[in-house]
Length: 406
Image (tube, rainbow, N blue to C red; front, side):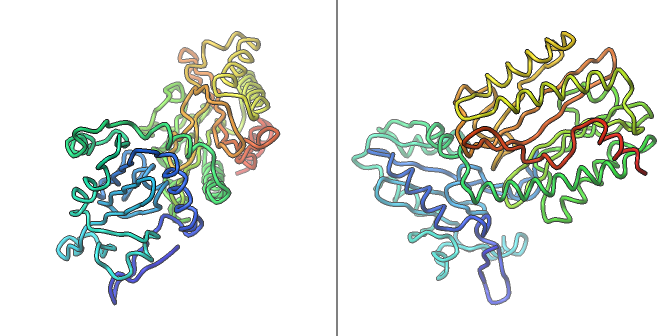
């Protein structure tokens, strides 16, 4: 990771990941600037080290991170058709006693650290913004706590949304982004395998979750979202995250757990038998979900949509036991800087090579205390799809052999 000596004694991380070079971030900004025409774009980075509901530590606003790679709080980005400026807070020695040294406006190495030729103090933003917007038609930004303040500064100009152009840019991942997603995949698969090795009746769900989180933190990653380890009836609750039940013999255990590494997330779900063997009914339902999963993956290709693969999965379940009514959610979303990245759930946007999505059909039957979901993260290729998490088995016989080997 790129490092910068913020003082003689302190070294701090600056860009999101050295795997994505500063030149790539600059190229992303240039592409956005070329489309601004008579507008300016303003993005605010997150401003504190508040704990995010999905990840711990500082979590940069994803659009801001996509265009800058900047991983420190309090920054502002201003893009015009012909210029770009990053605004940073000035050094605050008192605050840095609590949070550590930060790259600040006025530092002699701020340009090298940020990848921006023009780095100014955040306190200068208002004056710079007024100069930049003069004679231009509109100001683009995204919803957030600063929008009202920006609207006052932009009085007399249309305040529009930058979301569509940013979503379009983020939807297709670059080779560097795909490499980071593969890295998060490897850690996620290791975490699931660790859970399988430990799993047995009598343990609590939180113990299995802890085994998975240890693997992630041991690889300098974190959880991309609150881990779901749902046994027995809890597996019928889609976003169950209490992880407090004691696992019983005969339970199915649904584990929806993914890592976030170097800013990029991964998403996988497997449903396995706690005692090492599926019952006949569990196997029947599991095979139906697996068939829907495989049919949907086979339907992923350029030009398909989330809506179309969702229909494939539902139709399969309906044709195999009239189970369509037990699939109570969409089966896909984008994966990237966010666990629910662009393209959004059930989008009608056609897939293109380089998009990364999930395929995750399931059936949830509360009266039988059975919930089954099989989820993989998939890369759209020129001819179809690559299941990035294919190394984590879905075949029930392989799962039984693995879980039963204690």
